[in-house]
Amino acid sequence: MSWDVYGSVGMLKSLADTQQNFHNRFQGVMNSIDSVAKQTLGQWDGAGQAGFTQASAEYERLHTAVQSAFSRLITSTHESADSYGRLTHHLHGLFD
Image 1 (tube, one colour):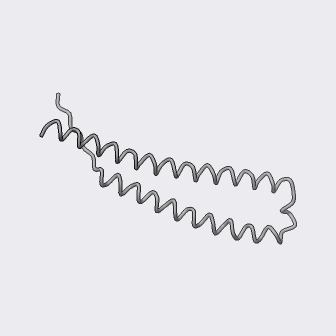
Image 2 (tube, helix red, strand yellow):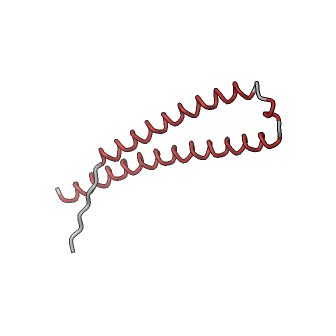
Image 3 (cartoon, one colour):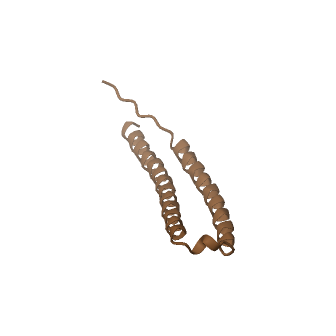
């Protein structure tokens, strides 16, 4: 039985960079939305209602969850690339 180990550390690192770019774009959009929403809330009579407070807290919870998920994804991809790089370096050393 033969085994083939294949992967591209460079592609994994590129993927992590792409993920970081998407995260940065997401943060930019969300910061814009937050800024406009905060300006609007000061002028909106319904902002003090209990239902709004609950919806606002849910938004914050979900936003934080997405930010955390993005960060874990990017970190995991970076760690995978680093680990795979060490593995392939080790394997090459075994057979050189």
